[in-house]
Image (cartoon, rainbow, N blue to C red; front, side, top):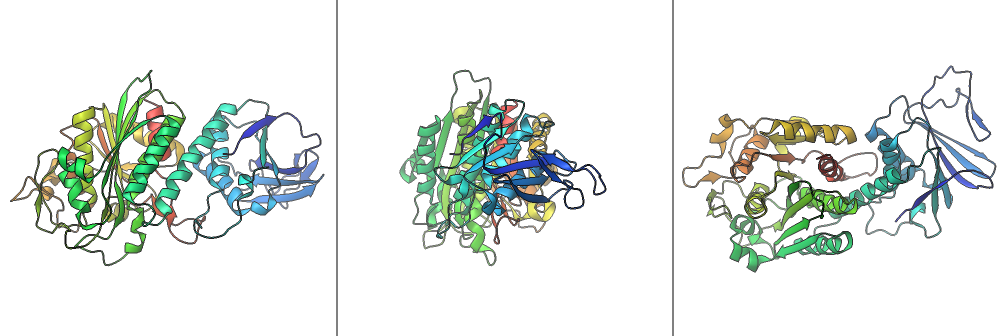
Length: 474
């Protein structure tokens, strides 16, 4: 784990200095100066997404352009970019120069971005260790203000996101339901939350029939993972549920395109696992109970069938229209079990649930569904502050007929080519026992995608910081 300490002087320092610079103007006659090094505006004036290197006094000075913004996500991204793409400039000693105008959350974003920059998608390739990970590496910061708390928090946020990204990006023959259960158990021991896991036998005894139906076609045993963080000074109780489909073939309604990326279908569950690590690591004074129903939606002679009618933990019957609408089936049992047995004041579920939400919102934000406007506002504020944005969509009763079945209490898919994300949310709502403070986050468009940090689609870690920030502000 990277550790960063404060220093007060650059005397006798040799190494790399990271110097953030707010934008001036290309016509400025006053050079940017730091520690005897001057940079004239003709070559660098702090423009957004630029940087400039100077070698002097046995040091590498990296001037980093911030533009005129102080946006959290931008700061995090630009420092991740420097750490990820400019590895060759890092000596074994690095100093981060904190601008006088920076406040705590900007320092947090800066440090978090630097740590995230160590992430390498080549989990099974022989690659050089990032300089930050070397045993003799030292990182310091220089500032007139003590930012220890913000720096510590930034490191913890990044560490939880790194863990989450690895869970999503590693292949499905590695990240099985059992792997997720073991990960949760070990994380609980390390960070201080209790973990209970129900396998197939115990899940059957309890009556988690909807959850178990999805995993029937897989050789991987389903794991119903329950995590409890119970601080002595808890002010409120929040419940989380994350979709943990470790691979989704679509079942007998097998996918005809994009199956290669379906290792990401547990990104909602991974976000909940990462959030539990971070919430515990930060020792937040909120009780949190989290459930990740984990299984694999595969195909064999035991697979559940289109037109099956299955039972659920809540006692409601479900007609199966499409076996590829499986995420809502495991979430139904997860939500029902959480609400009935733990009674949290607020419930939030996260899932890569529908392609429909991508068609609606693209890759810029997640879909938010709730009938509680205060909850909606708090979640959106938490997301806006850190760049994990949400946009609310309706849960009007006019959409209820989309999930009505003639043979069962409810059906798992409308069969219509429209409003797919909304009908999926209406299905989940049916299993919340009319909970007055429940929100569903459809993160299919933001949990896994393309960006500058890899050549192929990969995990973003979306949801970990969002949920933690929301809980922190309760």
